[in-house]
Image (tube, rainbow, N blue to C red; front, top):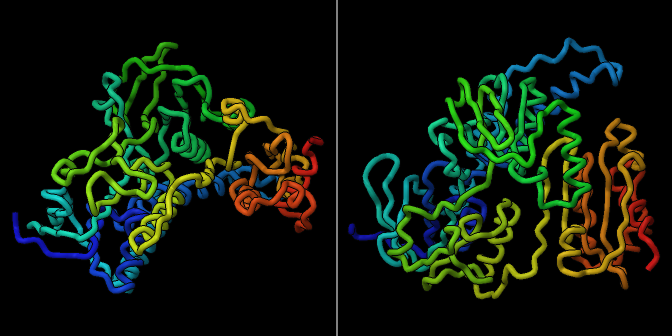
Length: 459
């Protein structure tokens, strides 16, 4: 092993918790290095959250154009140029990467581009992208290697060379018939987008409903949206074998017949990037799913080694990665912050959006928690009427014998923004009556929150 260069902190992976920790500690005078294999800033700004929302917005614009006559605007049908869609996305990504590089320069953190693996406790050997190797040793090491799309062992699937979200966001043409394997977040967002770009789309989901862990009224509403937009939805359908090659012709043999298309997108979950990075040499243990074992402070089984984000089994959201950063920074600077009891909000960026924070009805019943339910259709929200987007609903769970808000779900335009209003109230411990009686601007989407909580049944 080459003589290692010594650092206060070495971070393996440049996703949200890793880069934020590096910038914060380097700005305080510590010597910090971040090892990144390929994507400066991690998946979110390069191949995941932000690029996908960029493309999804382009699909929404295409949908608006096709509906122009409804708004009194003449259009020519709205032909989609996928090369232009892709170029717009790439320009945004380039800008984000440059902003990240500027943060490295400003903070003083060192960015080392290459593939890193542990060769000894708190010691990382890097195969540099430009050639050669470098060995880094940190007093503290943070593992932040993220996750990747999971490919299961269905016969013929790997040989079909299916798209993942990474390749789908780089397409320069609309697939003739895109078959999406998986009815979760990634699958649904991209399925709707490519349908709106003009392609045929079929979603194949092995469970009995799309986003099957949500309440029945949610899954039914989302499925109705997709069917109304012309997406062929096949739920309760297990794939037995895949034949052909994505980009040419693919055939899925299922327990309910065949599905044929030109392209295949796999969106059936994710797996942590913890294989092949020498965790055994570092004394770092993983769990049965391959996540790095951590405690509530994000400490691993090896002294001085921490892990955060997807690879540590945190919920797979960038905003949770940011909160992992807060936990890391506090603990690395003498505090004791933990991940215990934190809220995990989420948003599915279909159009309209689905957002939830706190308990769903399904979860409340499973935990034996009694509740009062309030629910109103989006059609009762005046702002939704003004933009002709009245599909969906708002609903909230309030404790049965008190005023505490237990959960909130929104399926409608700007659902993620509306959710934040309720989430802040929940964090502050405000009673639902504070939202019911608040003076909210008219006409806004958030105004619907007041109407929703006015519908809470008497306790």
